[in-house]
Length: 161
Image 1 (tube, rainbow, N blue to C red):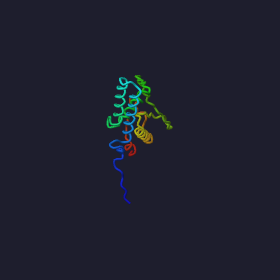
Image 2: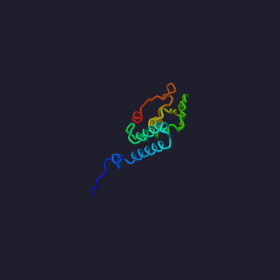
Image 3: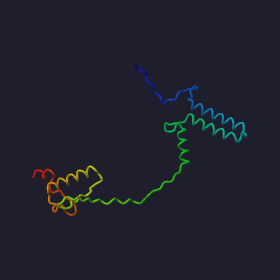
Image 4: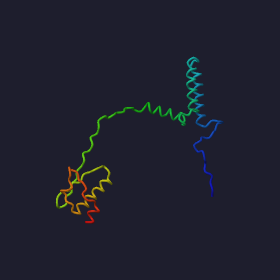
């Protein structure tokens, strides 16, 4: 069976003439509040209040700010006013972690394996290369030049021999 999928589901239905339900409620509330201000207060005090209430009701009903209803902006401004706004800037630089040095006991002595980077993949390939070289029996004394392990032979050269 084929079904018709609703399109335009984000468009609100016009219930009261050209107004949606929300727009109708905003206008109705603004008219009610304006009427109450006109009946309770003297006219010279009520007139500015009526203008403010009518302008607020009209902007809530019809105004869009950045493609969104104005009530969303009012809500965001309200939350901005009531939430704390304490921002701290820590200007101290964090000290980098020292480079860890690992040693591995393999009967003969220790093998220097530096931690080159934070990348686990790079670290794993480095340890595999070192283990292959140790298994091939490369002299450890020739490897160290200035405190850094330098490759003497590649893994293929070690296996060919």
